[in-house]
Image (cartoon, rainbow, N blue to C red; front, side):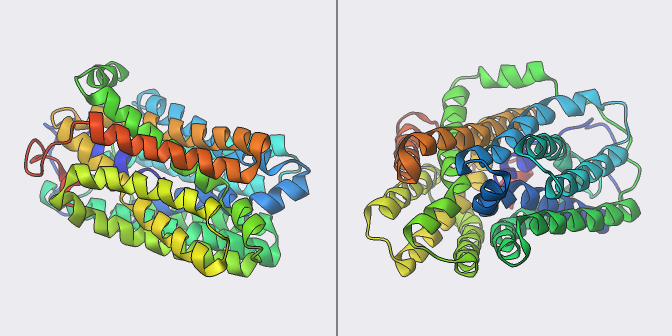
Length: 416
């Protein structure tokens, strides 16, 4: 997801290296993967902009409605680790088309769900599609283009992430305000239908290859310095998603903005997030460690400032933009770290990052809901802000970060 960049980069080398690479690039098929990324990311993030009306109509608290994010992330965690192996004998084209069908079904069934329980079950379907897609997308991309063009192909897939980040939350808030929250999920299903049709016509047959084994993932995790780095990655994503899941209730309770104003504020957040993604590449070339420390520290300071400074719409717009820009570079920074730290097993590290980030998303949404029920929305932002500052401290003191140009020469993800 949001949060999926790490997975795409580090999974790029899955497959049998002895297999022949394609002679010509299949760019339309690559674009279909970008569309899949956009559709899945949009669907995953929609509840963050629709918590208030969803909770009101279903007769539950906003904290409970926020678990729509949690169940998706938990399902994605297990799906990303297990589905590549469970589907190892199936054509990857068929598997990817199946994920698009699951995405459509999930969004439509959520749109017509009559209770929170039904909604949560349907969100599990989305999680299965999300985790499975992320575990295979980049490995499929490297089978669609020659090796020399893989960085460009991954850049196109990244564009789906960036556009989804910019569009998903404000569009959901806007449609929810005009036509009700269910309309946003119908729109997401329509995006899924377009994606499915495009993939049907562009994805070639892709005979299955042997995926990375879970045992290898565990071996990578036990290498010196990797576990503490993954802990820091989990803390950063947990803090962010505790904040992001409950961004709408916070803004409504402090600034009193309506649906249109909220959509504009969230659009600013998404645009700043996109800028942060671009800016991170330049900053990482200058100072990888400094960049990795600075980004969560800025998010933490911003979260505390949103609570402790006097609430005003202009001030919150600025703080939201700072938060969006700071977090925009986090997935890029961690993909760089993994590729540099584990250059010989980058594909196995991909499965590890899938589990880490998705567990962090689930933990952030769940912990945020518990804190919301216990101490209100301000408590969520204070606790998550402190967690981000602690993560920055851990990165600065304990995480080993290699300087640019060392240990990463073979990783395509470092050149995006």
